[in-house]
Figure 1 (cartoon, rainbow, N blue to C red):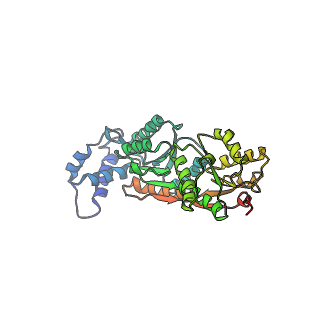
Figure 2 (cartoon, rainbow, N blue to C red):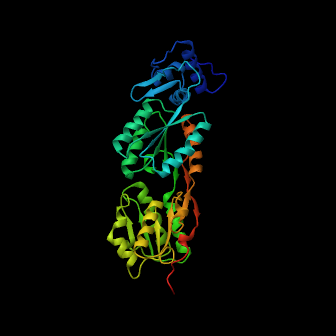
Figure 3 (spheres, rainbow, N blue to C red):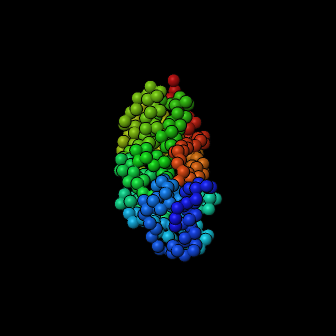
Length: 361
């Protein structure tokens, strides 16, 4: 290692090439620790930004690994070319959305010469902390995380992780306070689009069924519904808002009372297709028909929507577009390039469930 000839080529590339020569010549062997970033700056007479970009290029190629708090090391087997760098996806569980996204994401990541590895957390904050640090310690080219949980806790966790050298990209949901870029599905806009569909059909008495409002996803969906009503000058009857973890509230006596009431809602917005299927089942138990008595819309457009007792109008998220953008952003981050967050919504697939149930004038 030594000072650089500055006459040709970007400085970071010449730093990377010099370190690469040391690896291939055997001067640096698998498992060897590199000098500190500050020492490399002094050695090559370049800035820390230049050194970090060079090191990230070599990590992206599978030749180096960074170990949090310890420094940079030559990867075991680094002298052999052809190793495939990995992008690690940290996620709570394999639900319908994650399964669809992973399929598209693996295809798009592979196009850039990377492999995708999954790390499950079970929705536990401590497990996500461990998964993020493990990915960084194993030299992942980039870490992608499906954000779900309480917003402030997520912001603090991801902000801490951003202090290291491994780039982080959030998926599905944006956590603005964390400072991490995101390729996200705008669930607030999705629920708003579904709600406006009913409003445009003339409905004014609309109920809502959604997930846990203490989570990031539950909050976004609820505000998409509430703001759509307020934008049209309509009240939000809290007796017609049903939220909570899982689908336990579907057996709530309040739901039955609302659907039997006078006046009752003429339509229901559901934040998820499984919730919509449960509400449709409750309608049947109460001898109410969809859409003749109560119209419905939902979000997700899962594969069972067309075969429900009444085919369900649902918003289809653009997960393929999100995966394509995420793969491109992950490659840019691994190469040390800055990225901007990318937002995706989707399109409404109209079926019979939203087609009636207006009160007589």
